[in-house]
Image (cartoon, rainbow over all chains, first blue to last red; front, side, top):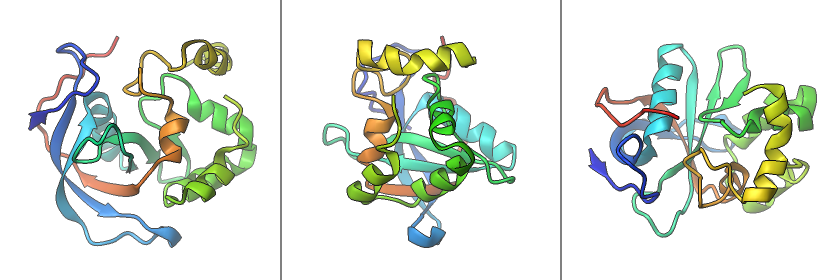
Length: 132
Length: 56
């Protein structure tokens, strides 16, 4: 495990590189072949991903460019409950509630679609309705 | 997060430019990052190594 903390935080939190068993998710919800990859992930996300997996939920990691950091860091985690509901991990800002307020009954469908989307145009189309 | 704080979150974001408590601090917001996603990964297991996890 290597500490690569780009946030310059103290010892209570850090971005770490862990070897995770992951599979790419593409449009249509198709999950690819799982492989072990080094992933840069904030320690708070680690805690929530562990909790999700222990609870039988699915966790999806969004990797986004962050100052040219390699490997690409996890910038969001979406947790999907077996009942189909979704929430953002480490959501201290309350974005899950904002999404629920914005999309109402469509919220889980939108987040289901979000988890497979990487097209900037489609992501904007999905999220531009969100007032935050 | 209670409803009252959730309702304030957009305003806090506008004022501070970031939530101030999340890993996104100083870099942007959750939504900003979601718009820049390059890949989504489903994670099936995570090693049981110790990481700094003390939260405020």
